[in-house]
Length: 404
Image 1 (spheres, helix red, strand yellow):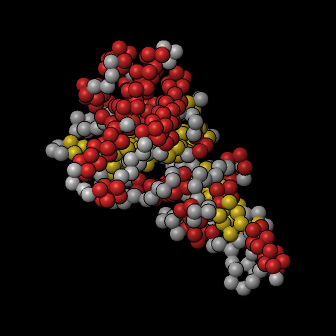
Image 2 (image 1 turned 180 degrees about the vertical axis):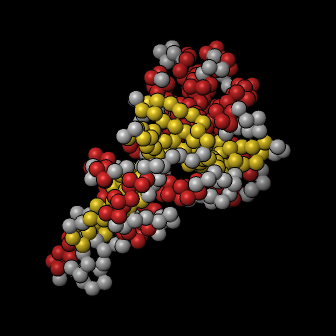
Image 3 (image 1 turned 90 degrees about the vertical axis):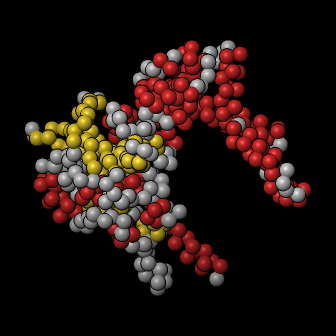
């Protein structure tokens, strides 16, 4: 019996696939592109479709094909496989209904017949981006365009329905937004090329921003989602998109400051780079003022010039101060470390202050239950480790600044 169970377990294991490896995306404009393996890329996440294990069950040699027309985002969803488990082990054990699972979160619809998808590609070539063209630039000999849209922009709502399907695969824990809320604003980035003399547009990425009200008559834009698709990553497009959006808000007198909703580590680093590059040109971030320490006037000047919040200004200050700090100078480097550690230690100091207040009103038993502070030695060890991690992140930003 044990041998039989083991055989069944081994058989079941053969029919488990890593979803992140078997789901294949392509941005295409022609039949040739559909069959070009070099255009393929894979998701970063698939747990929103296939659970925490990110596993598809029931197939051998599976390939899930998610192909989009690069401009219109007309979508094809299909799969190929060598065999499936249906009926091979026992009644009731069936392969995951992959197309159904994915399709439930594709409100814009999709085609499941590849020949039909290919037949429709030529008519997609007339696509032009919607919205207002606000910035153009070149990168490695190619032209790129950034467009500004809102919920009232003609053709945009339907386009966004298809565009947002990428985020579930490429932004951890992302969710769809309420496109009917008029406070949403969007920035779309396209690559523009020429095919047989005609302009062809391919989506590169986009960013969504929510316009929060700030009392009494201001606005506080909050970046919600930003995505540069994998074929275009590591080329500076994210920085160009963020910088372009920033400039739109910086010149708007109604904007108080620009914030970010639950940023990923990659976005934090991108934002640090863009803000440090801009703020390094301000007088308040001159080397002498940086060495003198962070001040409220520094935060105010950065807010007025770049619409940067005080919290983000502090990060910019710490990165730029590290840039002008001579780490071979023992005293200078020590002063820098102490300045950062003082900021890192503030939550601990607040916790200690709160417990000191509680001690005056709680009994010994109640106080013992409330105590959760580390020993001084443990706290210093943790503080040193946290500082090293912060400095390591700052150094990566400085390396990118040096290459700019």
